[in-house]
Image (cartoon, rainbow, N blue to C red):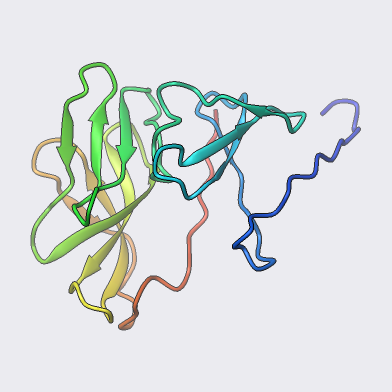
Length: 169
């Protein structure tokens, strides 16, 4: 940064992106960048800062949710299987907490950690092809309290916009 020099490293576009952007994210420790692969077994592909492919960090590479590893490194946001809700896994013990708060809400995607015990997520109301969605803050401990962060969308088959979050190390 101090030198002011910039080096560009091209990455091939995803085959199914139809020319759309491919977002990259930082690993938890900030040493690698990653992109979605869409594969269930290896949902993230990691690169070093020179653009070379690298193995992902053991604790976070298997997360198929954008939120990934919690800031304190103790919890991992994971996707539900076969239509079940997403869950949070304790990294040390492997214990899982299914995110199913009730009240007609279904947690659809875990987007970002707000702190060590709260996630920002897409919630769905009404499990149909034309459901309503909103961003919520969900406590992953105890009673899974949900705090709305936005109003509801209109009836949609899926959310039609994607928030972008950033963190500081």
